[in-house]
Image (cartoon, rainbow, N blue to C red; front, side, top):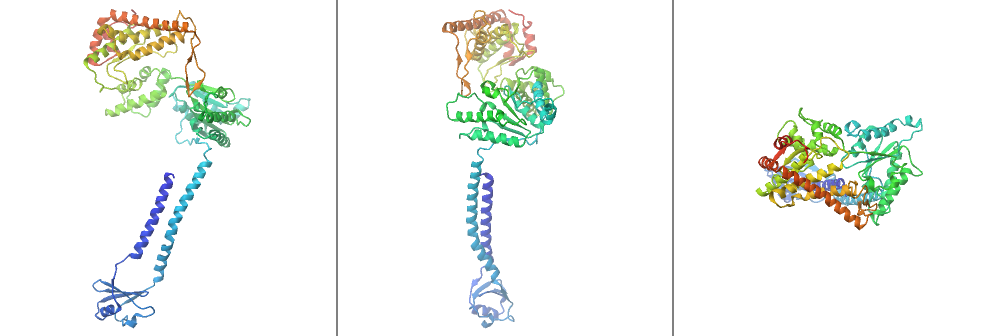
Length: 601
């Protein structure tokens, strides 16, 4: 029973209870006269103490001058005059009892039936609604776009190429004759591919706002239920509904929930998922396809999709969306700043440069966090300091000043972070140092923040090697000053080892192992995850790979050690400044170190 039905049932019950109460009040209203006799009432009349007499059938009620009332009964068929009481003595009022008795009798008969009828009505209604839910179990749950919050392509910053692809889809739906006149066919399916937060669903909303045609949207997970055949039934119902409203667009979000490669399930729900996928394949390119229905879908896992789903004739067009570059990040930030009180001196280009690798969702979160910080500090405008604070919170982690460290841990952390910064500043292929901090953020006790001066698509071997040395600089600084290691370098070692292993196994950057890629991803998918890397090399090669990875790590360690020994005085002076101030920004760091960045060992 849903909430609306519950409210209706309670209302009806309350009405019946109120009616019963009113009936009881009606039948029992008024003062209760004292029991008396006709003789006593006649005596009161003779004394002139009676104000009025009321006769209701065989009941006689006498109201005295002092307000008291007495009740007596006369014989049936006998007039009150027979008892010596006349209208000359006292005013007499005779009531017609038929109306009151009729209403009372009617209510006493109908109220029980009304109560029982109400209960039966709700029972039958629940049974009927249950049957309706059972009949609609295989119906689609797709939502039709109503256009209340219309989003256009102007509301999507960046993603220029992706928008151009989708503008063609919208133009075909608005002007199909322009394309059909020269024999062009619009793609039947458009697949949006990109990492999370890139704006795939936002672009789909923009298509819905621009197209001016029915736009049905749903998540792929809404197809699959625990009952076999329900997903396929919902697919058929969805396409039937879209054809009835054609031209129309169907948007399926997170397509990988049902579009995974077939033949890898272990039974149970996987069989139902595969049946649903089969039905989608048939509807998209079967005997009864409809060119006026366009399918759009979004996923961040195109590698796990079934090949039959990606072939031409189904998803003909694949729109690849990537993380925004610096100029696109600037546009996105300006778009999200439109409805915010932003200070006039905000430099969006600098903010875009400080957020490499940030998605559209990250940038929206940064703008919102900056606004929240300004409001928290009772400022009327969002300033540059608010954005700097928000960038660190979103990209690095929330500040945790309550995480207390003793003096020794503070010194170890300070030397560790300055070790990273010093090695990274000296080496020629690392990114410039943006900030050094001892304030704990996220899970880190401190952090050294390096930012690239421009977006980079390709990474060289020398950059990888210098990054490994920078990652090991904190550990080597601990060894140099305290002559021992701590657990603070755990994350650094993990990153350095991954870079070195990818250099050898994936990118072919080892002169000893040659331009060979070792190991391939297992194509068999289990629960959406690859079980392991398939080894296509022998045990002897595996030993050589491990030795080469170790050599690269040790070379980086030696490089970091050499720099720290050479510039130990700088390590001491910068650490002292960091202990006093907790943070060092880029300008301060350049003044303190006094060495040109990238000067080399």
